[in-house]
Amino acid sequence: MRSVWVLAIVFLLLAGLGPVLAPYDPTAINIPKRLSPPNSEFLLGTDAMGRDILSRLLHGARWSLGLAFLISVISLVIGTTIGLVAALGGKRADWMVMRTTDTFLAFPELVAAIVIAGLMGAGTWSLIFALSVTGWMRYARVARGIGLSVQSRGYVVQARLAALPAWSLARWHYLPFLIPSLTVVWTGMFARAILGISALGFLGFGVQPPNPEWGSMLLDARVHLRSTPLQMLWPGLAVVLCVLAINLTGDALRDALAERDHPK
Amino acid sequence: MIKAVCGLLLRAFVVLSGATILTFALLWNAPGDPAQAIAMARFDALLTDEVVDQVRQEVGLDRSFWQAFWAWLGPLLTLDLGFSAVTGRPVWPDLAAAISYTFPLAFSSLAVGLAVSVPLALLATKRPGGWMDRLAVAAASLGNAIPAYWLGLILILLFSVKLAWLPALGASTPAHAILPALTLGLGVAASLTRIIRSGILEARGQPFLPAFRRRGIVEKSIGRDHVAPHAAIPVVTVLGLELAFLLEGLVLVEVIFGRPGLGTFLVQAILARDFAHVQAVVVLTALVFVAVNLAIDLTYRIVDPRIGESDA
Image 1 (cartoon, rainbow over the protein chains, first blue to last red):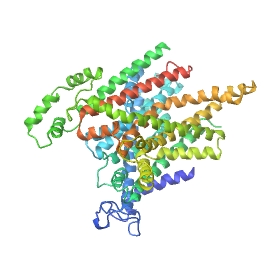
Image 2: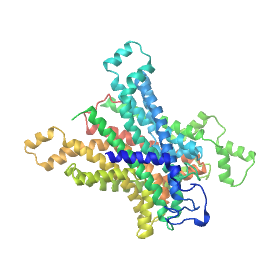
Image 3: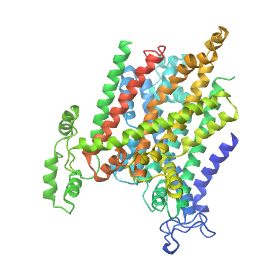
Image 4: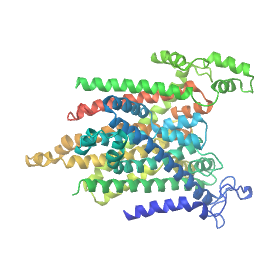
C-alpha cells in the first residue's frame, strides 16, 4: 500500500514542480519541428504546432490536478453544507433538500456538465462551474446520512436540550464525525473530476488552447492518429496513472477506516 | 408496501418535475442571445437587429420565463417536442434517428460488460485472495481509471490503423459498432466486476449457508438458489450508477467514433445553440434515468423484502 502513497506524492510533486522541470515553454510554437517523433531534443516528441509534449504534460498536471482539486473542494463544501442542513433542519427541510438533491441526481453528472459548460461557452470558469454544480450530491447524501445517525446520540441530544445554536451543533458535534467518510468520498470525486476535466477538454468545452490540459491535448492528438500515434498515448497515460493512484489511495483509506471502526 | 410504492412514485414525480424546470431554467439563462444564434444558423450571415428581433418573436423568446415554460411543457406532455428553431424541422424524427443508433450500442455495451464481468467475478471468487482474484481486482481498478475516449483511441489505433481489421468511423455497417461497444463495454465490465465480486463474497459469508450444507444440500443448489440472489442485491442497487456511466460514456464514444447517435446529436446541438434539441435530449435522459431508478427501487424491495419502508 505504501507504493500507492509514493505514487500519489510523486504526482503531487510533479504538479507542483512541473513548470520547473519542463524543458521548454509549453506554448512555444516551432513549426519546422512539428510532429517530430520522440528524440533526444524532444523526449516525447512535438505536437502539430511543434510544441514540446513533455513540457505540455508537465504544465498540464497543474491544470488537470489543480482544477480537479479546486472543483472537488468546492463541491465538498457545497455538498456538506446542504447535507447538514437536511440533517439538522427537521423533517420538512430534510424532504425538500433531499428532493432537490435527487433532482440534480436525475441527470448523469458528466452529461449535465457537458451541457452546462457547452452552453456557458468554453472556458476554465464554465468548466469549474459545470463540474462543481454537478458534483456535490454525493457529499450531501453522505453528510445527511451520517448526520441523521449522529442525531440520536446522547451528547447530541444533550447539546440540543442546552439550546446550542444549529451552526455550532453542526461544527462541533456533526462535522468531526463526517470527516473520515467525506474524505473517502472526496478521493473518489477528485478522481472523477480529473476524468471530467479531461472529458470536457476532449470535447473542446474545457480548458482552451494554447493552455496545456491533458484532455485538449488528446483532442489535438486525435487528428494525427495515423501519422504520430504516440502523441495520443502520453496525455491519456497521465490521466490513467493519476486517477489510478487517487482511487487506490481512496481504497486504502476506506479499508483503514473500516478496520478502525470494526477491528477484527 | 403500497405506501412505500406510492412514496416512491411521488418522489419520482417531484424529481422529474424539478428536472424539467431545471433543464428549462438552464437553457433560458444560458449566456448569449439565442435569437441571434438561431438567426445566424438560419441565414448564415451577419444580421441587422430587426431580423434578430423578428426571429425572437417568432420563436417566442420574448416571453417571460414561466410563460415560455408552460408553452414548452404543454406539448411535451403529449410527447410533442416541438420544432427546432435552427433546422426548422420537428425535433422528434431527428431525435428518433439518433436514438436508433444509440440504443443498440448501449445494449451491446451492456452485454459486453456482463459477458466480461460475470465470468471474471466468478473466477476471482473461486479462491478469494488467490492470484486470479488479485489479477481481477487489479484489472478492474485499471479499467476504472481508463477514460472511454482514450481507450477508444487506442482501440482505433490497434484494430483500425495497425491491423486494419475493423472500421473506425461512422455507423454504416454492424461491424462499425464493434469497437464502440468494446470501448464502453470494457468500462462497464471494470466497475461491474468489483461489485459482483464483493456481492458474491458477502453472500458467501451469510450465516445460513453452513446450515444448508449441514442439511446436505448440494453445493450447486446453494450457489444457484442462495448465493446468487444475495449477490444480485448490491448489483441491482448500482445499476442506476451503471446507467449513468453508460450515458456519459455514450456521449464521448459516439463523438470519437463519429456515430450519429444521441451523444453526437447533443454535442452538435450545444455547438449550434439549438435549444429545442438540447432540451429534448436532457429531458429524455432525465426521464430514462428517473424511470430506471424507480424501477430499481421497486425491484430492490421485491428482491429483498427486508428493506425498510421508512428509508427515505
